[in-house]
Length: 408
Image 1: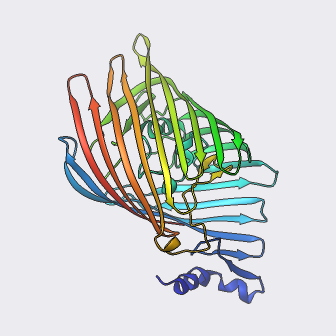
Image 2 (image 1 turned 90 degrees about the vertical axis):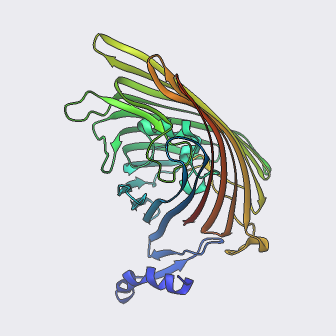
Image 3 (image 1 turned 180 degrees about the horizontal axis):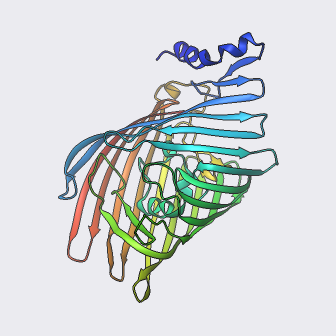
């Protein structure tokens, strides 16, 4: 859609405000093509993260060899700021398609009126872990490391019913949340948990930034389906998904008395280079007929990314995570004539084998290239080489995945 046509499309619903004498302006952020709409003290910022994944497994036997295509995420809506004191998020997830459930991705209300503090309630993503708090469209790789996905899905992650108190500044981020289940068709609203995150920036200069943090979550009441005991499942796709029908890592549904995860996170940014990693320990008390069985899962990842062309990733105090690279100049198309370009490499390890539970042990090498020809368009190409070990089998796989993304 041409830029002028798109602006008229966004302005049309608000034409009534003009006739009533309410001042309206359209402001464009630095190097941004999608404008925010200002109605007096109300600022409406359109939101979209729409992704199309194409790829598959040149070498594997399970669960789905070949090539697939999937509209991975179709999240659209708006975030509204009122008097610089209140923030409302209203975002709907229309994907994945085909055959994916639609859900409310974000429906939250935040109070920003107290300096350095944010109070939030509703359906949103509580602060937990470094890679989890990077917006999906801003992550270096197309999908997060498996251990980051598995742990955050226990009591944090997207579409979570929660209340949170957060404090943040140029050198710190602290957040505590009480969470329930997730919104949507597969909701588990009767779950109850506590989530927290502590982050500090001990070194911050023009060229160097060090980030350290600690996150934790504890489920003291697991989700319970009618007629079933409280339980949870620990699982993930092999750090990509093009419509797979099964998961490589999967413990199955485990009856639980309680469960928690605790992790350390660290990152170092030097000019165009960013190195980050996290390690997690998962503790679960399995419900048995004669008592309980203690289960222990673990995992970690380490990755490095380098901005070849453009302005490198920047640390944001509100999320205590790093944004995507941008153009160093006020350009929206083909920064420096070639667009913003970034390369990355990652190793990840996720072990879901403990006692009588064999959910698999996955180790994966990944490399990728990200290109932003415009500020809202991203094209990614990723290669993976991994191994899954179970008690009676070992599966080696290779995968190639590409992604086309629109995000603003």
